Structures are given as C-alpha cells and as structure tokens.
Length: 57
Image: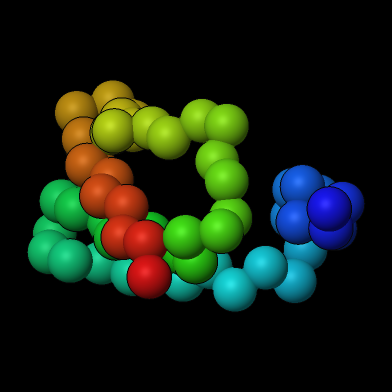
C-alpha cells in the first residue's frame, strides 16, 4: 500500500485559480485531488453578495 496516496495537500503552492464569471459570481478552479474542508456558497459585505462556484478539473 502506498501511504503517500493518503497525504492531504496543504499550504502554499497549490494550483488553484479564482476568477470572475460575472459581476456577482467567482469561479474557484482546483484539481480534483485537492480536498477542501470548507466551501462557501456566497460571501457578503454590506449590500454586496458574491456567489462562489467550484470547478474541479
């Protein structure tokens, strides 16, 4: 059994991209093998609400 397969990728240097889809939505693109403990669906500041969509490649 290869124990390296069970190591979770952490920290800086991960290939994650984030870009605007439109004026109110951000796309976060990451590799499938990267795990995320928390995935927010939206964030807000005062009257501004930004939706977050995740894309795994």
